[in-house]
Image (cartoon, rainbow, N blue to C red; front, side, top):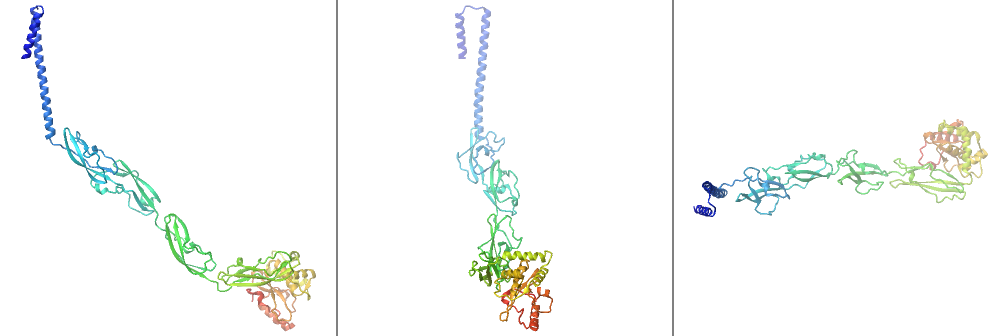
Length: 532
């Protein structure tokens, strides 16, 4: 009302100051002033209503936020240990929590492995409450160890979480990025298995190792002394088994090349991963019981000043029938190849057991050229033998040539060697039994027929020499090209047995009074078995 009076006074003042208006003008002015007064009252009423409404809403909202029920929903969170976490991850997505904000009550709380309570502050409008959420920090296993090629359980992603049991009943996702193979299909090495736990990647090492040693079956061995053995000799063939390749099979203790005693042998079998098995087996060594034998020795004719070859044609064997030829020792210290004469050479051999034998032979150093004698003999042989003949046939042809082209005659100052005697036979076509023996020896040798000398025993009035031959490997037989005064087939003397030699000896005694004609000195035929 105070405001209206003030306005009326103002209007009176204005009317006094303005010129007089017309009646119509005055009426219009009054109406306008009235409208202004009404609008002012309406505006003021609206303003007051708004103020009162806002105050009422504020009072209601304050009362509602402080007295209405504060409903909220939180969810457990599962993470990999070491991951970070935000408060919002604990809010369950729902309408109830749409306007609720969350924060950690402890700004920098420490996350540890397993299940833990997390103090939370929830805010809804002006209201805050303190509550607790639950966090599950999962740890994963670092490595799986598995034996190569061994079957195993199926690989499961949940098994890669070490403390999965603490989150029993709490849903979380864990899976392999790629499905793993069966365990027995992985090779020996470290394999990386890639997994994801609630979208967080992690890795587990699958370490496949071969720690299983090989297996094998041992076998005992019996050998003759001098034989070599290998580690494999003590393992049953095909019995070695291992999932990995075998790296080596070796003796545990270094063995000598030629075992000489019975012993227990240890053999180590190792695969490429260093796994080793040692097996034991017995080695039995059979020893030589009798001394060895040297064959093929005989009188050697050598040319003055030329090197002497002692070993061609000489062999040696032990009582197991094994060759010892490579182990023959020759002692030629008593031979002077630069002086004509007769010397002694010694052949010696020792078997693997230690049994030894030695043979002494004569070396004739000559001033006759053996090559010249050989050339002459080869020329003769070309006319009486050929390659289509057997050695027996060749021996008979040589025997006939000597008997038909030689005349028996005593010789003073007998020859010193077979080459010397053969040279005289070729030159003179006559001679004594040594010359007959000599030319027969050279011809037989050049024809490739094994031959050796044999002598009558000492103590008889006269000496006699003839040959032993082994044509076509039929055994050693007597061979004598000297004319014999008996009524027998002359060809028979080219190939006769020991029994026949004794018969001819008895006949020579009966007919000619000559005793011990073919009774020979066994020292010349040691180790030779003559056909009976």
